[in-house]
Figure (cartoon, rainbow, N blue to C red):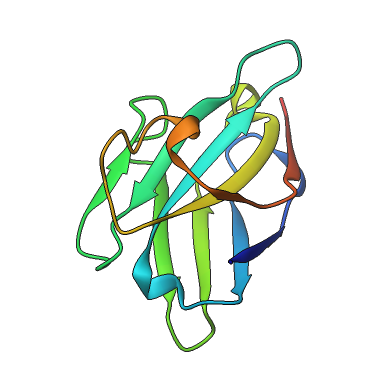
Length: 125
């Protein structure tokens, strides 16, 4: 079992940055593919990015590519989503998710077994 807790959300102006954290307990994140998803009001959940369990491969949605970066601190068993050049359309609840090793269907939320509670990100124009 893996327990995930996100933090770091908030209200920022467009063009600014935020860093979300996803702290894990129960097992080492180095064994898991980690995904980030978001859901805006009235919209379906969408894929943001994913990091391979080895930490050597990253995948991003086109909408965030070049602006968002996923990283991991194994010593702290925590993953991060650095969000730069934020836009109002990035406003959503952001979730981290984990699945054991496999990268199959990494962009599908249904492929992940463990989820955090979500953290709200609001970007004002």
